[in-house]
Amino acid sequence: MLKLLPGFLTLLTSSFVLVICSANAEPRSDEEKQETLIPLPATQLFDSLRADPKEPRFFISKLSVDSEANNNTSIAAVGFGEHFGFIRRQTEPQQGWQAGLSAAVFAQFNLDTPSDDLINADYIVGIPVTWRQGDWSGRTRIYHQSSHLGDEYLLHQSPQRINLSFEALEVMVARDFGSLRIYGGGENIFSHEPADLGEKIIHVGVDWNGREDAFRIGQVGAARWVAGVDAKRWEQNDWKLQLSVKAGLEFAPQHKSNMVNRRWSLLLEYYDGPSPYGQFYTNDVSYWGMSLQLGL
Image 1 (tube, helix red, strand yellow):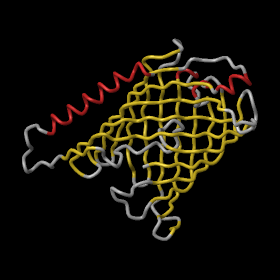
Image 2: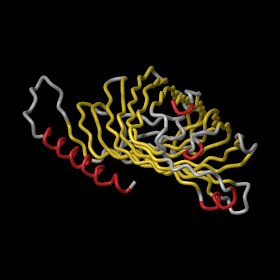
Image 3: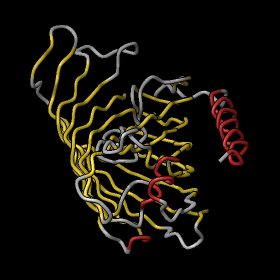
Image 4: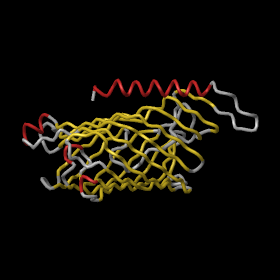
């Protein structure tokens, strides 16, 4: 993973240079909309995929997991990550394109063991370029993922270890239809270990945000109903369906601004299909539980 750092830094530096140079280009006519260069934007142009288990975000989940090896295992799944914007060029509020950095750690702990053994951890770092024009939005991201088993899990279970590591190019496009958003795209894994890892992923889904407040908590904020369905098919698993569903309440400030724009969600979640957890991608699992999510 560290070998990739110089390349990531070079790409980020190049992005900054290109944006700054374009800002000093020939000015537009008065009839054209004024373009604005915004460093470190506080919002995102491409909204996070609500039900995607591998979307960079902060969360903690309590899950009941059934797998080929074990039935009804209690697991705590946690994630630490976010999409961080470095620069945005826009013609209107929330219209234009943006470049930044995305990074996340996804870890799973076995709550049925005395020491809550770490089972697996996935590390992801990438460079997303996002855009929005009207009801359309998109994300192109190049990223690296590496996965590692926990020491206690290795000692107690003695599994067959897989050295999973890859780089991938993701392209996603979304369209808003009022309170609904439909998205689709895919990924191409172009550098990977093991060598026979499947390289193609198809990714589609839908998010729904309730328009009306379910209830309010004074001046603190309001709650609304939200839901998401996310589906993937990976060449590695003979295109088996990976289905993730989340639904619940999202809490947000009533008056959004550049200073106050955070949200948190309390969601029920369900998953069925090949495991989304790195080292176990060859195993079929199903789980359900509750999740607390934080993010933009």
